[in-house]
Figure (cartoon, rainbow, N blue to C red):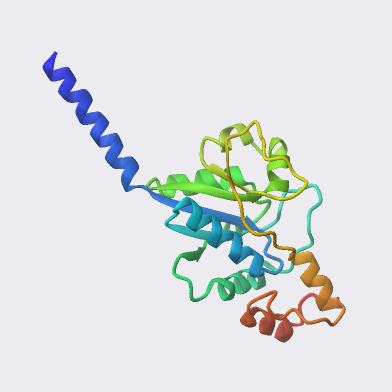
Length: 210
């Protein structure tokens, strides 16, 4: 009996050690068309409020949403994300979806990342509007077993879900990629909406002018 108890205690200690040693990694996915200051604020607020070790920005290849956006080339979006997060060692970029290509299903991506990095626990960050959309996500019942969803509260959207979601409050940010694209087409300034390096890249490449 003593031997059995000792073995059980050893297993518990090993499981606790494995849990403690795991890194808590946030994933902020999106088209980033283009990335803007709002993305940085969301990533920083979630990271600090939940005590995450790092947040990875993950550009998609082709979003599977019904209201699918027409995005510019992935290489341009990756470059702008890299410029956006430059200088912050707590932020990184995850290229799994861009490198795989095709439709970017979160389930496939997170399954791949979990297999490659079993040392990480993943926190997938989405807006309150996307929480409302979760029932339509590809293989959602299996996906919630792979990641912890983090919902960023938004006005006019409920903070309830039948799926496990951690909610985070952040200041309201009325900045969107679509608004920035519209301002560019109209010849208006996007200064302070995006990082200076991103604004220069957009101007040099003549992105979003049509």
